[in-house]
Image (tube, rainbow over all chains, first blue to last red):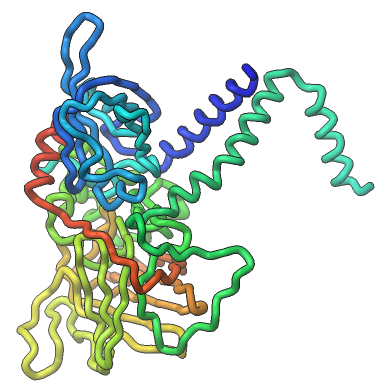
Length: 135
Length: 310
């Protein structure tokens, strides 16, 4: 049984690396994973990317406000995400790929909802429309 | 027993006496292989829940192709991810590989180096990009099919072939009434009485014709040179000429090829999409709405893109 669990873990790791390797984006710490539990403050269902904003309390009681992106709505709905996926105050556990510069920002890989269900970002693709800061 | 079978037998025996870790690794790979169809299915399943999704079924053969007909709603046969092309045109991605080096003229290379994409081999941090598109400037043609391409709906009338594109809800008209492509690509206009005065366009001027019962070829020119060809910052000049070839394989399948012909920026034509396969979808499929929204983009930049690029 233990061997099977290890096997599954290795399989998932291999799979995750396959999905994450689709494309590079300069701002992300590619391959790094963080899992954070917090409270939703906003779910911004928008183009070019949806944003999930949530507060995470550290063991010392310090609060950090995180902003995490997904793909645009039409790329998320096939994987079960909707405008109603989150409400303010929801307790969620977010797995994301953080940005390189240490800011509390990242690209969502999956979110565990209050009811125990998990929304997966689906294809693991990074932002695909060349989005970024504008002059 | 032939030599090949011997090698396989030998390999199997070696595997059987390996350590526990090796067995674990083999199990992990088997798990991965078992799971991969699920993942592939997810990648291919990119449409509105509840919509009819027409996929190829093993052993089920498509009917014959209709003649002079490529109308319908089309989706990538291998799944929606086929159209993303984040690192540039699918057949020639900007990945630094010699075989994907474009045949730039000196002027073309200079224009390429002046473009600052956020993807591809010459990518820069998003704060430094001069990509016109993310701020919701028009992506134009052919970028509409060389980056973030999604569903397309093709309509045919007696005088036009119209393509509706999901991304940013754009459309193009390809004239089939026998008119000629503008003679001067740099000062383009229709040689038809009553047409608007000549001007370059983000979407160019397009004419098309059937070259056989199942192949439609369109030529386009008259482009505004502010647009990029793809997401990797490949440039084009005002001399750009694009050749689109649509080949109906059978009742359910279509192939699209895009060739870039721009003598100012490239020493020879090059193929940007090479027989990319599409699959016909149900006529009841409603193409999802996907717009570029400046106010939402501004909020995204403020909350995410700008702080991420610092």
